[in-house]
Picture 1 (cartoon, rainbow, N blue to C red):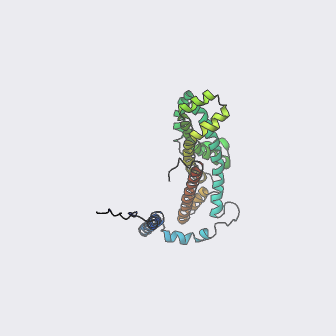
Picture 2 (tube, helix red, strand yellow):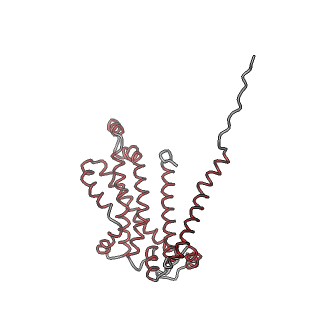
Picture 3 (cartoon, rainbow, N blue to C red):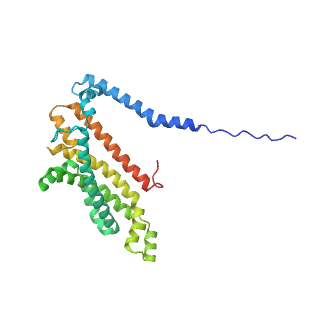
Length: 279
């Protein structure tokens, strides 16, 4: 009598080591190679355009700025660390105000359908106004660079927070509201146990969009406003002095900081909403 032989267990196509290697290639090696290719193209292009320095020349021209980011000679003559730090301080203040106002007003108009219908077109129009367009109004109204810069950050960042919060509140399932009415939950418990948790994914979407816009806004505002320490003013000052390499270096730092701010918000969203964020 033939006895059925047990088939050996099939091994997975990829072992753990293979998956680790694939992840290293995808996350590190591929971006690094891509960056090298782009830098090479830039270097070749700069050979045919003398007005645009290549990556090698940029490093040569800005070597001291790269090595000494913490120098401080007083006034606006400071290293790139202090320039970026001053800009980030303004972003933190303006963005915090935008978050408080945006979430508060968003909740209020999200709970009232008629108010939402009346104000939504106005918000949609105002959110499309570029940050630079707000600078003359801010300077005319506030007369000082610092508060004007904070206003530009606030008015640019508040709209995505406000609109997304209002949409999140409106998306709360009606069953949740009905249960709250049946149980006669106090307003505070309804807010913290039903409304806020339900709208939180939308709020985080607005907050993440807003942090990028806030960073863009301060750069634009500082370029126009003279005499203040900040990475935007650093770029404008370098342009006036014909230091193109310094402008390119500042742009690299601006991109890295903006990327870091976005990653920070992504990390916070993963920590607060671990089950609702996909990697």
